[in-house]
Image 1: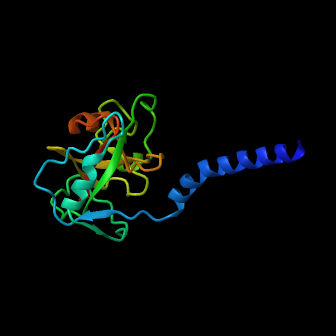
Image 2: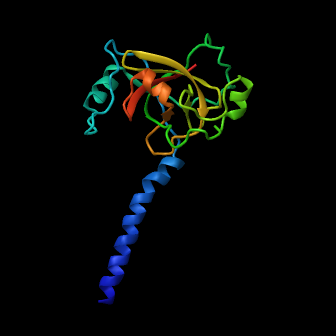
Image 3: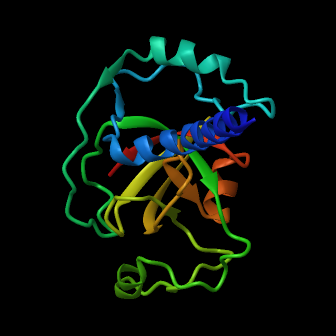
Length: 188
């Protein structure tokens, strides 16, 4: 009886550790972005189906000649008017969106927003994205299917493993993204 109880507790501990380990490793290991050497001729419509099927992704990655690249060093914060700067490598990233429940909250990039005469709280019409590490104001070119936008980093997040960006509702609508979508991201 005592041995069974010990075995059960050990099993629960191992199960709990198996739930925490991937998240901890995701935060510890460095991100390895992929640069697309050549974009495919066909549109990049890669949003996962409601069942999570991303079968077209493998074909696209092979067709695009994926080249691993080291993470670029942090760049100086570009201004919103500096759109003529050369673009960095393109990366396929997973984007989610946020908004309801956060409206009215002051954004972490409030100083950059204030310097550029923009509202410092998240609003329904905020034009920007959340990224964990890019400097506030970094301009990103995002492409989903045939739609393309240039947006600044105005917030921090997402804090869910495997997601690189959180889109404001206005950016989500402009790109035509579902709740979770794959976008081509390029740092401007």
